[in-house]
Length: 250
Ligand SMILES: Nc1ncnc2c1ncn2[C@@H]1O[C@H](COP(=O)(O)OP(=O)(O)OP(=O)(O)O)[C@@H](O)[C@H]1O
Ligand SMILES: [Mg+2]
Image 1 (cartoon, helix red, strand yellow):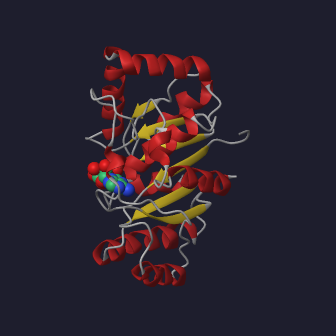
Image 2: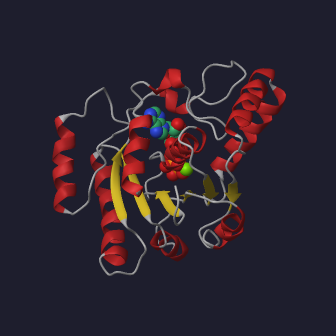
Image 3: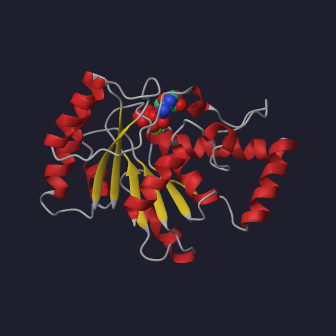
């Protein structure tokens, strides 16, 4: 994709909503399957879950013959490197993109931001995103608190013209069962009234979202070195979500 690098954050104040998981899944799919160049700024201090994941992924890719072979095949075929994962925090996140921008043509930079509120630096960084996607699950308490947070971003940053944000979308994650129940319609109506668009694609609640590289060598879903395995894509909606996002980010 030619043009300006797009800044994207899967962000919400709610812990465990899927920010880190979705960031990795989408980044890996875009970078290793869809031919885009991405980078990740890991601001989730002090856990730095994506950096830790990259370390685990790399270790197995170097020590285990199976992953070594997979990595060799993939990286020769693609003729590019794994995407960078940069250790950062909400204060330094934007400055930390500069070294990246100077030497590669990046289509997307994903920011894994912490779920803290009342963090001035977080708000400042969020305001510089091009797109914010808020993962949310259909639980009354989660919906109420998440909508409070998102409406605050909308009113204070977007509506006042104080940000670069071009789109703010809700994303249903951990949807139980194959179809969304009626409950979702009720919540979606509320979001509509608040002027918050919802992505068409939702992510189901399935164990494969936790499936990483492991000594068992089973097909991998969540990895910073490989895209989700084809055999696990069906019903995960990952591919469909990525396609929807590509359309939105155009
Ligand atoms: N669609 C899903 N189905 C099943 N499990 C999921 C799904 N999405 C995320 N998870 C799991 O939920 C847990 C929390 O996800 P994750 O760590 O990505 O959330 P987070 O928003 O980054 O949390 P934190 O606020 O702690 O940074 C993880 O164990 C992850 O594997
Ligand atoms: Mg996280």
